[in-house]
Amino acid sequence: MKLDPAAFPSDVANRVLGREAWARDKLAAHVGRTFVVRVGPATATFLIGGDGSLAPAPAGAPADLELTISPVHLPALLSDPRQWNEHVVEAGDAALGGTLKELAQTLPWFVEAAFARALGPVAGQRVADAGRHLLAFPAHAATRLADSAGRYARDEAGLVVRHDELRHLAEQTEVLAQRVDALEARVAALTTSP
Image 1 (spheres, rainbow, N blue to C red):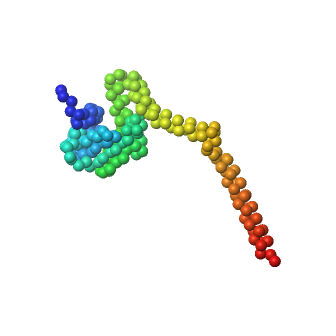
Image 2: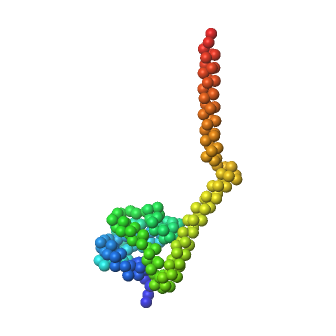
Image 3: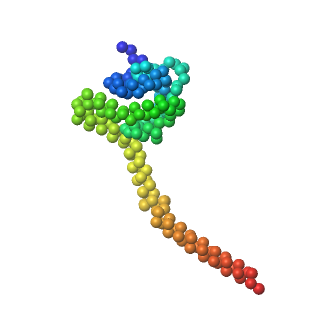
């Protein structure tokens, strides 16, 4: 059996959808529609069939929907598809985009079910959880690194002003402004007197 690179993404998607008639029914409502998924330089174009299955779209066919995902954000999206709005840029058919977003929300369940079939329910759940944590790790590490750098800049290096210090500076600035206004009034009074 020869592997067709153009059909590979749709073959994988159809494998996932194979046991899920409800998901295919949702896609079948968009029969004949095409959508493109772009992740960095990789692009896959899909055509939705009448049974809700996916096939490679014909070359040159206009896409009804384009989904663009940064490769940097892909692991975070895969670990938590609820972040769809933060990481996926949609252009085109909003109804189709909504259906794909809804199906993406169930992706962790598909993965858990596949692992459960292959490894058993307990081990499958553990492996799926471990995979989710590994995919979320880069975002977690970046957040922790930024938090640590911010605390260092504020507490150790003194590069960032603390909230209480900023409030104290504002109060002192207000007092100084009042004193300058009073001094200005006194100088004006002295210069206008005979």
